[in-house]
Image (cartoon, rainbow, N blue to C red; front, side, top):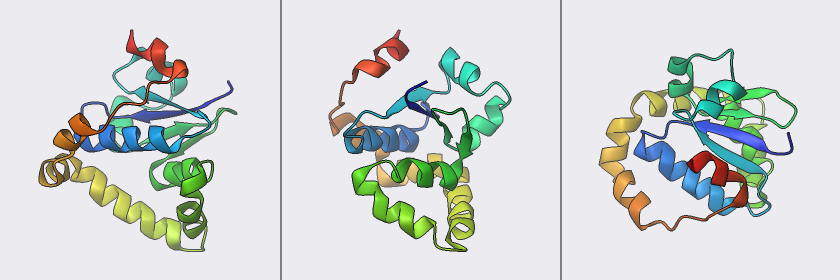
Length: 139
């Protein structure tokens, strides 16, 4: 496994918008976005139920370790040039616990927030960055 896999809710406009943004920030193509509706998601995280996958983003590292929620974002941002400042803030003692609380609140309210912020419409105007490592997931 040479890539890190991000498992996300592809039925959520906010989650889809975040993944599109991360794809643009992933200059070195180290991430592969996997919608949880795809069979590969269950293969990558066999011990995690669908409900848990819907609650938070999960990152399966290239070494097989699974990060969840704000910790997954911290892990991913540390590997993206423009994400490093945010990742460093999340390493300050106590900040990740606060970030997890905020993440859980946003996750619970993501469909409402998607409508409020117009994520679905933003997704339609944001250009898609095609990448080789994800072509297999579109089948």
